[in-house]
Length: 363
Length: 251
Image 1 (spheres, each protein chain N blue to C red):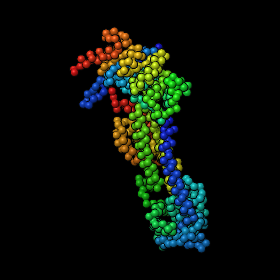
Image 2: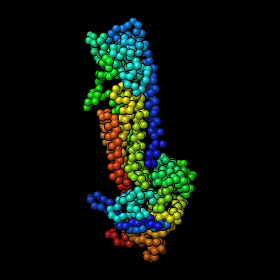
Image 3: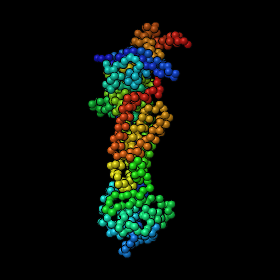
Image 4: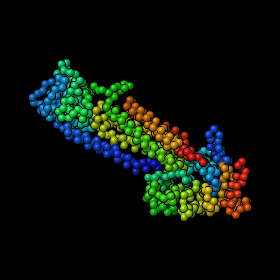
């Protein structure tokens, strides 16, 4: 109880400084990159109309690559089959691909569409009657050529530009992308870029949880705060639950602030299957799982060294458990994680965990 | 008024390497009445702290019972602790809360109806106002001990269990703290005071229990103990008992 207030009022703010600063830096970098890329557009077309406002032109694997001034115009009137361009103005964050296509492309059944994220080049290809069977390299083999062309046009050596290009093949009249992704399918779940970001965030959550466990919960045991709490007229499970909730809140807030730009610009927008609610829910489930695993390490350890080693094993398990939430629906992950946390809290109560500090030094 | 503490046959054994056990507290019994300061005396390792920890529910006894105001502390711990104020050398307070915040949270957790008024009262009583806005981590030893006592007192419990409350304090601070104990007794509280400082016990305790190797060596008022052992002070009684124990031991 005491600790909850302390975490919320004093520890949270200092702990937020690093994520906020990092998040701010990411946003600034994104803005800088976007301003660099503004008005620099690539369009691939089998038939280049003269009226297309071409800025740069080159060839890649049999495809003509054009940089045009206005990618929306190029794709919306059907003169480009494939395009790469800057962020398309519109609804912005959280908008599904299909909705955005509808806004940009008038006749979505025939033309290619230009779309990219600000810092992740994303190429969408729609097969049309005009391009099908054409004697050109398959579009998914054009990636390197397009990328090299982009790099060359920007005057940068390729090793300085690490943004990957993903090719998405769209069926006519379809709003769903068939991914030509290099990422594998695991347990029936096609791994997406946002899943990788999620796993990265789980690693950060686990490490944060480890630090909070060692320097928060376990340190409190050593300082005798548990002893004070265990002589108050409040059940031990309430003390454990309040600590757990404080830790979950802290981890979730830190992770969301730290990864929000990444989730926002890459994760959600690049994914057809996960929206904001799912992303936040998965992060929350991971934080609950990490808390469930590191809290007992702090409560049951007999020494700081033991807490550090058991906590180390716990966060490895937590990384796998937190990463595994991408394979199940978000609500299932959240429910399961909450149940695990409750089981841990009541198990610690049953094991008389609040009084265990005393056994370190019996008299 | 009901007895503040009733202890019957309280026993605690600690497991030792090799599967044996060491009896830390061996079947002790005593009562603490309202308006009484009851001293628990003994040398280091006599079992005082273990006894107190069993009394407040931090340890489960292997045998015997402990009741606080008639409530069995191990069967109904939450109810029993509502009547309890506990202070020990090992209990801690959150370093990043202020004195006032710690008192406020404790009062609320202990179910005090008007927490703000209770906090103001103990701040006045224990003269904490000059540092009530300071973080716990910035307090001196004396300030911290007064704050701990205030925390134990904020819900005005009818029973105080104090484990070496003057430990680490200078003479002035120690006397001040003991004066708070006397005031609590005068207000009707039962106080169980564990100490190894005989002078403290002589000064404030109405009755004392001398614990040697986990067993009750003597119990009674200081005057009764002096008369029984033909001694002129509690210190002399204590020495006599310790010598008798040493003479009776295999060594």
